[in-house]
Length: 279
Image 1 (cartoon, rainbow, N blue to C red):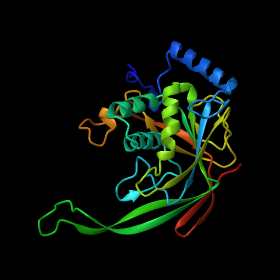
Image 2: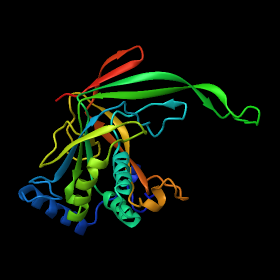
Image 3: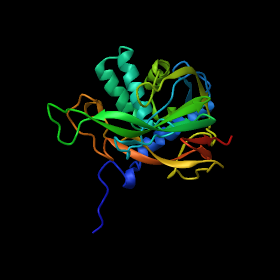
Image 4: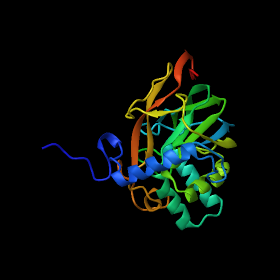
């Protein structure tokens, strides 16, 4: 007998079908946002997408989930999971109460997040000398010398993050507007970014990422596919917090989405790879 997907998640990490009532409510709100120019969270419309613009001010790095500690292959864009956790982190730093941070995390579970990468990205391939614990550590020799492969990305231009307001209440949308300027890094610590501004859009161009499973997706002339992680249907602060004793489970607290990223490889050399976006 065929194995059934776990409750709350579809096969291969896809979200389970949305209940009819929730889908109808989302569709009605989306239609209202498309035609209503009144501000949401202080940002004038119309448009269902809240778009935040950032400028990367340092090298970016965020390892692919399948990477090992010794081989750190990086993604070229932040994942939905990384962006949402950056907002939760910003909420703590902005003085939100813990229960409000937990509410924010739950509210972000069903929010569709898309990323428009910079026009050009150069990945540097580097071998580093590191110190690590041996397989059999001892008091006399707690660490040994080793090497590790690391990749970092120089992103030339702006990043744009788009959030679907149709999945949010006006209260939570207001929280996003307040918190997005507080986000100053995403991915590994030191991957700093500078907030530029907010706007609303009715539609998104193919310069933004697209889930590969989405009906009617368009493939840009330059692109590649990568598995980007996102919150799972049961994601909560009690599980995803770094200080929580619970272990996050795939497809329940964290899911992976095969995503079309509009950056294509255009040049390769000793120690680097260059990607460009086709506008």
